[in-house]
Image (tube, rainbow, N blue to C red; front, side, top):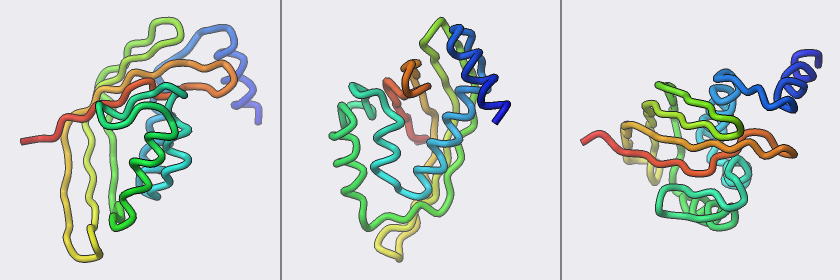
Length: 136
């Protein structure tokens, strides 16, 4: 409880650090593995973008909910750079996912990602825009 109080205290003063962004990304990965569309959508800003595919939490939730035949077996995002300027953070890195489609086909996905995070006082760090670029 004390660590959470310290983190909230630091955040309220506007002094953010890379570990906050790294922690938010770990939460994102955990929810992707569970394919929890509702919780993933809530990690986005109300007007957040999932690439050019979905805009806003409802649209993101609807898009992710359409993957009922997909089970994520493994997901890992490795942060590269994080640059924080006041209440905005830009993060780059690499991702890897292994997914099972229709309980028979395995997909190995990977590439780079760029995430723009914004600090929402009542919610914490939220994704304003997440873009992925798959390896060729």
